[in-house]
Length: 147
Image (cartoon, rainbow, N blue to C red; front, side, top):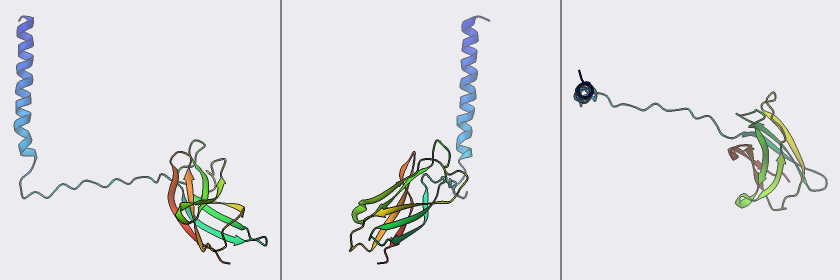
């Protein structure tokens, strides 16, 4: 058999196989009485640390101390909860606590920030966490300021 004839035979076999598959596909779709195909829901892993608790205590000098508990789904030296912040009206940042390392063996963990100055008429603030890779996000906690 010549090379041309062998090549033509291969193309004929491929065409025949393709025709068989194409004829088979409509039968795979199912009939009108078949139940609908439901896509499975994929569980997406959280991308940010969650604030699970926060408390504000007023100091004698009028400043505030915040004790904030975070839970981080990623806690490795490459990715961890690297900060939390206090937000006021219009998401104005009123204070920030930078975290310099992971807390892999301490979940959830609590850290404090002292000396936060807040406007006298402010009634509540929001505390939010930050992931070293994804930035700010996750579950927040609203803290009512007891004066």
